[in-house]
Amino acid sequence: MALFNWKQKLTPLDNELQQLKSELIKMWEMVLFQLEKTAQALANMDKDLAREVVLTEKRVNAYELKIDSDCEDIIALFAPVAINLRFLLAVLKINMNLERTGDIAEGIAKFVVNIPEDFDAELLKITRVTEMFKQGNEMVAQVMNAFEKEDTVLARKVFKKDDLLDEINRNAASTVIKYIQNNPGKIESALYILSSIRKLERVGDQAKNMAEEIIFYSEAKVLKHKPKNKKDNKENEG
Amino acid sequence: MESAILKAENFNAFFGKSHILKNINFEVEKNTVWAIMGPSGCGKTTFIRCVNRMHELTPGATVEGSLKLNGEEIYEMNPVMLRRKVGMVFQRPNPFPTMSIYDNVIAGFILNGIKLSKNEKDEIVENSLKQAALWMEVRSTLHKKGTFLSGGQQQRLCIARALSMNPEILLLDEATSALDPISTAKIEELIHELKSEYTILMVTHNMQQAARVSDKTAFFYLGELVESGNTKMIFTNPKHERTQDYITGHFG
Image (cartoon, rainbow over all chains, first blue to last red; front, side, top):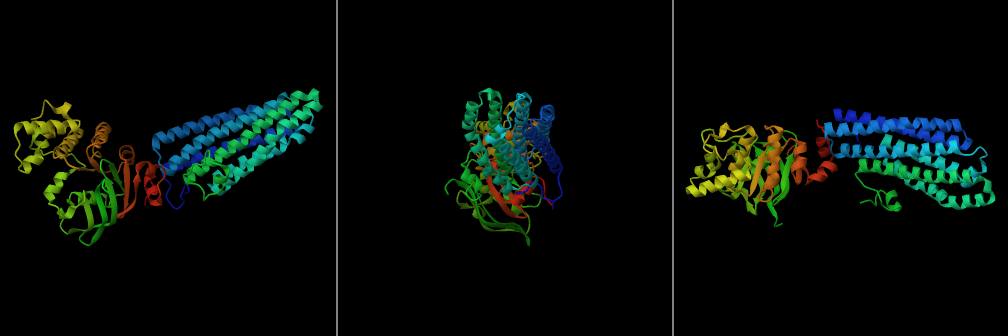
């Protein structure tokens, strides 16, 4: 079911929810921008860009507080029910997921700032961290589109995309160990990249959580902690 | 089903030619609180008025189909006996203005010509007022007129009057809509307590009240029962779009 039925006159609550939705999308865009800037900073070892990401993180946090307090006000003043209530609960959780995603971008940006000057670009290639970053960002962007359009089919597509992140994350440790054995002088850089991979794996999880929330509010189905094959298939859910 | 105290099967009600209730199928289990919701004119009041046969007091009113209380056809029962089993409280408190609080509570017995000893009367008055959570407030002024009480107290007096006959079902037709939030809260608390002994059907326009108080909710629209089920379900994930539109305020 859609949140807004444009054939009907919008109630004051609808207007509030619409505003909340566009607010959350703005935050989403900002977090996505943070991720993209961090990916660029990592690929080019651009420490200035990384510092910019760290500074902008404060604005993401401000968005989180604003959306939290807006949700609280709407619940107190309008006592929403049914899809309106589910939407608000989903927004509260997506808000938290986005803030954490923002934290991840900030965390990796800090690594970029701290990585030693003699960084070996080969590391980016062999660990596939750049590829992972691209996929993670795509997932976050796709969930944002799904949220904007209330498209649960699109939201479901995100679950599969997480496989690539998992695979890269699984192989990362052995690749990094081999690299360190061959380049004992570059342990610090290698560890920063390994930590970044671990963090990026969480970006995929956050994107999946947000997709689950979209499905929760529009279809009233709870997909959390369900096996993957059941998440993909609309018919199998109970 | 044994536990169903009230059962409607293909039940229809008419005022003259206008078809007010259309093919209602509905079961009420014992000791539950049902909230009946719907926009004005959807037939919810007509439905509960049918349960104690007040509907037929209107000239030209007729019914079709079956409506059973404990398996017994309501429209074949003696209306006076039926109304002893089905108590009703209305939107505006309506204690008998010339009677004392005491007499108001036992009005059902007085008007039915049932003779009771002084002790029996005292006991019924005390128990009913206690059940209606009014005893502590009025026990020293039992012989004052009922109309001296506040609106919320008068409404609880009406509930006590309905309870004095020891009914099986209590019908509340927007019983709190004329009351302030404190009196409303008292009556809602009372409904919770009464649930263990009575089955309660309440019509309410206050959605939050339905959500707070009832176990089950029925949604009527244009004389049809659109959706009924657990209140929690209706307010978190209603199955019908019309129910959702109504509870989220998108009607008309």
